[in-house]
Length: 607
Image (cartoon, rainbow, N blue to C red; front, side, top):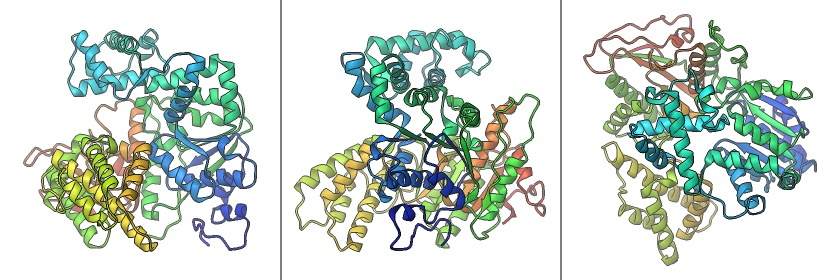
């Protein structure tokens, strides 16, 4: 039986079945049920498998009570995945939530007794209030400026800085639009005053207020600590100081916590996330059990070796912050050999997009599903060329990292219409045909539009709902059951509640940041030129290190096919002034030239 084979011999006890198929290190994680535990887990090493089996094993052996376990992660998608895995392991009832979701639930429950009165309304998007505050100060209010100002305020709040304490810590930071620190401070103050006047709180306030209630009300703290006795924190390298303080408040000095992370995947420092808590965990908890997961089950040896070389090539700079770079985990590939990474140099961005689309068509023709292919780039602005090239080639695609799926206007409309139709549906109706008929009025057609932009995004959203209906119908047929429109409506209700977006059938276009936590059979890393990777505004040694980690995350998303490309110029006919990313030199195998030949047409340096 392979290390990742979930099958277990019949006749074994439940706890033995749970441990079956785990490799030695995963088994150590699963059987170390008392904290503190620190799991250093490299990309593709089965960390989610290890921690879900740990929880399930703890429940099966009677050490854990399901309702007293709180498993924390950073995205609703990751929480849903963990919840589904636990359910399949017979461990239903465990609370699996993001930090914000767990805090909001507690705040809603305890607010009346701890504070009194109704809980303030929640601001889901800061843009409106920040725009108003900026206009009151006669500052620029275009969308990009507002987004950057919102990010700076979020950084300040997760770093637990008030408007009064912000200037001292912000000194030396790059301010949005080059504003003075004092200007941003005044805007931060104005934003907070607008929220107070309108009885509103934002997502950072949810964490801050929960911390305040737990630290100031002993009765509430005692109730919460009695409710939750065991904690698991996934992606621990991404916690902010505020999230760490909330975790400390939940623990109340207890030690039953298992943290899981990889310092080499720390890519959100600009949001206030820091790997310091992960790196210092053994020092904060001297009795901690430290377990390393390095067996990579996701990627081929060729991809794994490329990732290892990237991290191994890093050298500390004179300005590197001591301790900010952890010794990387050296991954050990467990999959059979695959193709060597491909290297492609193009004369310009348009040629790169066309060449990438052609390679993708080859892969699809060879049997690789479009949904198992991704094009990753450093900035969202790079997506347009690939959208156009894929549309021209007749290849479906989806944009990741844009508005949340169920918040899109066309999806909201579709869900309402499908619910209404479900109530009126008759047994003789063909639900799959009915879904297509309903969504066609909103812009769906069986043929994808060749255009890009809003029309294409709308179609992709509706197509995802059609695919969900098709998949549910096929699964029902396989079980010899009937699929109905109310079944679809109920599934959509669940997904809306859990923000569990359906998988779209098409090539994924995404920034490197938004690709975190995902994986595909084939990954195209595009735009690997100086000024993009590393990004031009990354100037300090620590910032360059973060860019290296970002590329590492991109590489480790690939299971089998990895294609790296760069361009010599932005536009056709432009002066070839771009240089390949400095990171690429460390990635080339000995028989690959250090620089690809520079010609007027695409050149595949190696495949």
